[in-house]
Image (cartoon, rainbow, N blue to C red; front, side):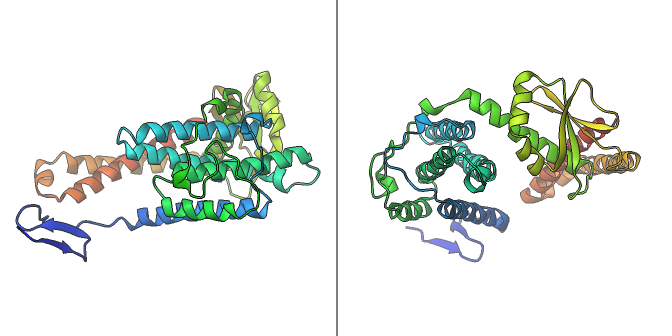
Length: 350
């Protein structure tokens, strides 16, 4: 029987004479750091919940939730649960993990908790709304422990055990269990809510797109810009008016108005079929910004052409190590993605 040797320095396991590799394998430390940051994000979310009085509530029924924001996060949890449940049995672990990651980091930590802060921490809030939101935060963290358990069992069991000490009865669809691994997989299909997804989804997309445009055209971080909704539908107008304070704060918008046409010298944004505009006159020098973007676009074209010459060279492809070829492909993909962003920014300023 052949002995197996392990190259501990490179983390490379191999069998003598059969699978030895002729090059070192890179450890993507940035990915490891990313996973660490993800675990920290979850832990901080649990601490935020604790500091804001979010605890399990005996007899809590998520199907009775009224606030659109809370219905939205439950609907997103249902979508994530479906994706994870579909991915694992079919061995598509990357898709299952991606569904869990997007829900926890993007929907819950980045957006839901931020949008829920005025209800959890604001003054003059309806006590019923605050109590509902506190219960939802606790409930969703329980769901996160279940959804992430196939991938991060140690962290999820620790959070689950800590929450078990709250003193409130655990009333979950999963039933009472001292360990996450003993609970039933959550069935959340009944919590899907298209209306809530449309309302909160529009707010999230609008804020995200405004932030992107500000970054693309170099609007100073501390500068507020007005926002104009052009020919907004009644439903969109109602949504924007309801969420105006949050949009103004998170997107650094000075005021929101509704007009029949886009103002001159403004950057247009299309959000779910609705047109928004950021008037930029007096905020940035449009000619200088157009010139900067045009120069960057030309530089990106040069970079892409250089990589294309390498990848199209048979001698380079035959001699270059696989990781060098892959680095060039990634460089080209990044340049093409950036080029698309710059082209969009120029189009907005035209």
